[in-house]
Image (cartoon, rainbow, N blue to C red; front, side):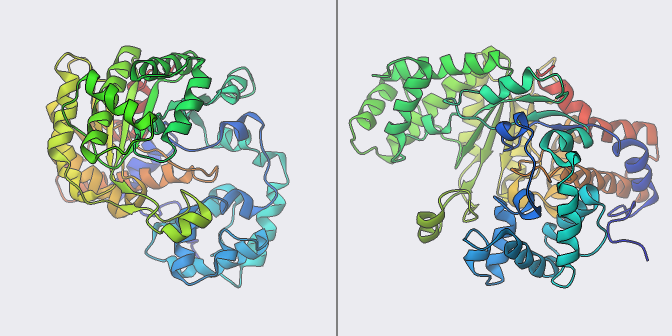
Length: 467
């Protein structure tokens, strides 16, 4: 009997099979945005059991388990790792139709050679087989990265981070993968958050610069950006609810900053003005450094306040926002572009309703000498599944050039997520293969094979200034 995850999984035409097996399959991985721990890479961490490497921190799985009514003690609570795994195994058959079902079995297959479908009855067998392999030297973080032929990893790092683990990775000749930090200064931008003033103190200490006014703040941010650059950073990242754009002078931003520092309430208009001025400063800084800027737009976070008070952020209580985008996005990009200070930019949006807004906006600000300077990023978070990926790529193809797309990233905290690149490549090849079979694209495998290879790896390799 053919295993569930077989060589032609999700490849529904002859053209798709040729494109995947002959062109896309063996391409290296360029994972330019993720949330892996550089400390765990530097220290070559081993994992005690399957739950530790697979379930800890995975809010995708947690949301599914909560939907089934599983007690929180088996999700984020005090239950043992084995008990948590058993509850996840019990949940897996109920995830059919959700990408979790595919990811679960692809990860079991690619890492552990397990073809057994995971369920309550097979949980003990799978638990024992995987844990036995986890005890070997082949399942350390560095060996996993090596096994999946990962050429570049872009982590997500706060400006106050010391980057000591990145330095250690760089100095370790055994690590052939380029592991670089990405600059994420969101906490310096989110002026209305209760933790803003506390963060400014931490930033002041990290930059060794007393921050008494807005000018000092910008100097401290620039100081840390140059430090990140020296350690290999060439990418920034922002997680923003919406793209702000309200006209704001340096003097106005300075007054708003001082209000926040003195504990005064900030109006919504003042918040938007401060964010606009600060993000424009950052965009210009990135352009001067030759960095790419990523904007992750449209998440409304920590919606369940009761659970947030118990578990904190990033625990599975975020969702898609519905907001105005077209005007501020185009105005923001235009403000940077008017003096040629717009960096390479990748735009992601959590709400697929806005695909056409982004797909048309990026065409306004492309630049000579750069292939796809402004990018529509891959299906993100809730769109990181077959329908979401197909829609994102189809919408990009309809409105721009799919051939210039920089492709997939894991956006994950898990070292078991690399099969998501395979998943993406199978979906890409099936999409293009379908165009071939319906006569919408020529059966020119050299042409199309080169395109899928570019999207799988080469475009990203050429796009980012990471050597």
